[in-house]
Image (cartoon, rainbow, N blue to C red):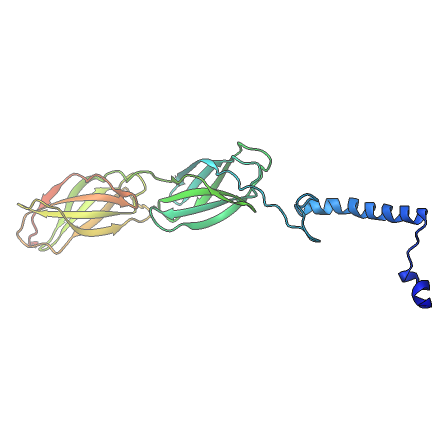
Length: 255
């Protein structure tokens, strides 16, 4: 009993000056804790328990007016406008027309607390590809996506000046002018004389252009039969109008 009463650890000074000192220490500790709570996203009003639970911010608004434009054979320029004051990062997602979304590198926001800034980035793409994009704005409260924007919103233009360059016993060689927009390849169609429908004979995957023309060979033809030919350009959004038609008859080459 004597030890308990006299042990300083168990003895509290009840004099007025001591009470005032303790109140000052408590107030000082509270004041020092407020900046730390602010850094953690907490406040005395929303903190709970000894640690406190942060209140998440509202999700940002989706970016507006996204555009995607080819500025070369292997690069797409993307732009969008910031509509929020609380986004932390912009995400860039892309896909082949109708395919699964994939992630491109994200971009940290440089317009926190303001709106209306236009962002511009470039995205490297394989030659001739046509990707669609949307842009997301994100923070700890969620993610919102912009409308979709496609680098090429239409099918390619039609090939031109189709002509016969070679005749074999079961084949016909053809040449034509390339499509002038972002084609992925070409389809060569044949039709026998008297038939009403066109049949796909061969597909040519487009390559980086080395000339303004392409060559294709229609094969597996029947000797002596009259055929007509036409070519269409294709990409992931569809195919072009057909080229002009030319006709020829496979025959043995006499030397």
